Image (cartoon, rainbow, N blue to C red; front, side, top):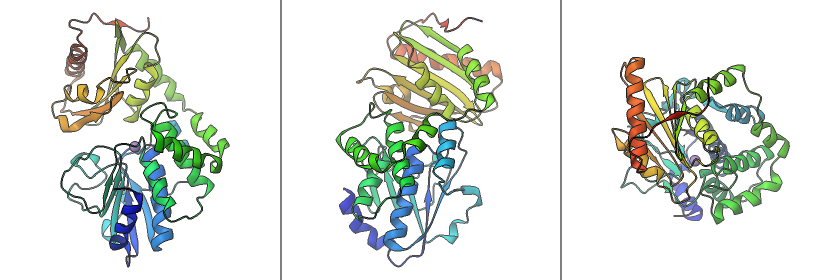
Amino acid sequence: MNAEKLNNELDSIFRGQSSCLIALHSFPDPDAMASGMGLKFFLEKRYGLDVSIAYGGLIGRAENRTMVKVLDIPLKKMERIKLSAYDRIAMVDAQPTQKNLALDSEMYCHLIIDHHPVKQEGRTEGVWIDTSVGATAVMIYELLQTIGEKISTHLATALVYAIRSETQDLGRKAGKRDIEAYLQLFPRANMKYISRIVHPVLPRNYFQNLIQALKHTYTYRHIMVSHLEDVPYPEMVAEFADFLLRLQRHTWVLCTGRYRDDLILSMRTTHKNGDAGELIKSLVPDERMAGGHEQFAGGAVPLGREENREMKEITWEISRRFASGLDVEKADWKPLVKG
Ligand SMILES: [Mn+2]
C-alpha cells in the first residue's frame, strides 16, 4: 500500500459523507498532532467534510503545548465529543487497541494511518500501516501530494517539526522518504515558529521535576536507571530518558514514572542495533503493553493500590531485569548526583 493506492480506496469511505472525527492517541505527540492536522486538511479539500480532531489525556510537554498554541491546532477533548455526531472516524499515528484510551476499543475506525507495527492482524480495508517511515507525518505528506493542494505555512511547519522531533532531527530511524518529505516541506515552514517550539517557555515546576528526577537516577557501568515516582504527565518519562542518554560513556537508560494507574516505562540506547523494543517486553507482565524500535521503546505496567514501599520493590525488580537483559547480573547502582 502507498499513498496513491490509499487515495483510490478513500473514495468509497468518504464520498457522500458529511463529517469525520480524527482520533489521536492519548497524550498526543507532535507526530500525532501534525498528522491529524494534515488529514483534516486533506478530507476538507477532497471531500468537503466537516472535520474535528480529538484527543484523550492531556498535552503536558512544554514543546507540545507551545506547538498547539503557535500553530493554532484545533484540538478538542475526547470527553466533550459526541461520537454519534460523526459519519466517519479516522485514527492517525495509532491503532485502535484497548490501551489508547481515547476511543472505545470496540469502536470501528473507517481509516487508520500509522507507522507503528500492526496491532491487530486481518483488517486491510481503510488501513495504511507503513513501518518503514520514521513518522506518520511523512505518510500524510505523501497523501497530500496526491491532491496537489497548496499547504499552509502552519501545516508545513507542523509536519516539519513532527518529522524532526519524531526522528531526533533525522538521526533516529529516518530513511530516504523521511528526508525527502522534510526537505520538500522545509522551505514552506516558518523557522521562527519552529524555534519557539524547540525552545519553549518552561513552567517553574519543570525545574522541581528535573531535580527530583536527577536525585532518583542511578548508574552502573554503561547502564542508567531512573525511577521518577509520580510524574505530572506521562511523556515526562520519555523526555527524561532522552535527556539522560546524553551522559558520556553510558549507552542504555531505563526510566519509569507513575501516572495515575500505570507505571510508564521508557528505554533508550545509543546502539544502532540495540534491541530496546524486545528488551522492554521482558520487563512488563503483559508484552502487548510494550514495544518499540532498536534504539527506543516504551511500555506500561498496570498498578493497583501500591504503597511507596511496594512501588520501590517493583521498580527495582524492573531495574534488575533490565540490567540482566544486558548481561549485567548484580549491578551495584550508584547515584548519578550527590545530595
Ligand atoms: Mn509517530
